Image 1 (cartoon, rainbow over the protein chains, first blue to last red):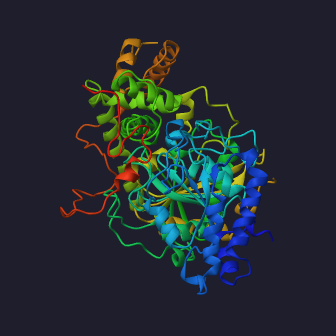
Image 2: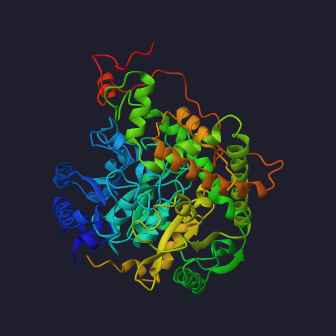
Image 3: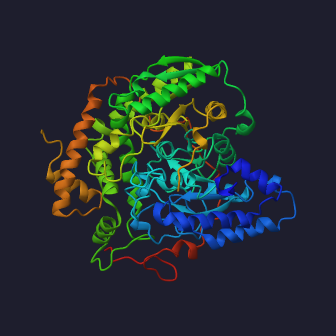
Length: 485
Length: 96
């Protein structure tokens, strides 16, 4: 079997037994990227030379590769995560030539675990978007249908995994940007609890919402990556100082007796019937596996879009104020004074969606509007969070769809920003509450497009959602089906 | 449609955000912001009396470290991406 089609845990076995070498494996992925990525555009940049050198170093190790959890595993990294000496653009022209002088904590951890970095993955500019159409460097195409979006903002990361252009990847999720593209591309995506994974070296979009997480071919791989990524970091004051459990062994426990809540508000009017059917079938499967299923209510779900699209742009307007052409990034030439340098650099460097969100964010934080919008949205956020806490009094986890529709066509929603925002309704609340969420393939639409099941858990309970996802995959094979390329 | 934000206000917000919008962009932006802000009215139907705002989803408070000098970026690394620089500083148009 072609090694590029295998999961991380399968590749690990091959590499440890030296049935395939690290260089050999890396080369197979690089060749495949060369053959297929011109069409898909999952990658913004491929670091072939460095990847092979990293792989060589692992091949030369005489000792047991078993000591390194990810020895020789080739990964893609969303281009919003700083990689030292390697251009990091955040999908934006304003950072087109930015080369970070340091590695993000997650990169350091993955390097230390023996991973090989193939390249940087395409994304919506500054992680703002749900389709990767907002990339300053062109969209990524969905491997299942190149006329369709891969989802966003981690579209490149998800497409790369779905097309076997890497063994796994890193994405980021602020309002659904791991879960939704994973769903659209038929792969697994995990948004950890806020604070579980360090944000040091993650270019900030919305600081109270951003999280880095794995996008992988199966749930077991997601657990393997999370094991390496999770943990307190003194360089990120929002990272949580709590011990990291053993995700890997915990995943294989049966789910008999677990109580699963199905939020009725997540089956929205206008939802694609194939999506509803696939998710309900997944719920029935979990019941067959011995879980107890009950309908619950998350009454403030409908306010999630409004709350999020006030809070996230507000935080973004502050975070993106640093792009002023002074220390790094695009500087508009010939500015006659400082103010004009700022205005022209930013106006030329940012795309329309980024500008829209900066404008919205600036407005809702401005004097006279702060209370009506930002403060109000923050109060509604408390209510949304409380909805989940109440639900978790009665359930161990929640099951729901990830998106109301499968992957839409490129250009279909890009003219109407509000329509695009509304499609995030099912992923936003979990982000606002800070709870972890897993997207797992659970079926296909009649057009053959992947559909994801969303598994939501209490804060810091990635173990529960991984366990449910893992058991679900043991008894289904949606995740084994691959797009024909 | 009742206007939530006027073109004049959009111009003002753009100034605050250090963005320069062309006339056409201004028109489009005004329309889009109005549509979006109209939608936000939905929040006014939620009773939030006595509800504390949430700005962070976790319980961290006052995360401090001892006041000790630790390593930082070397100057060369810090200046590496500068659009204009000399040996020690970032160079910008005259401020004063």
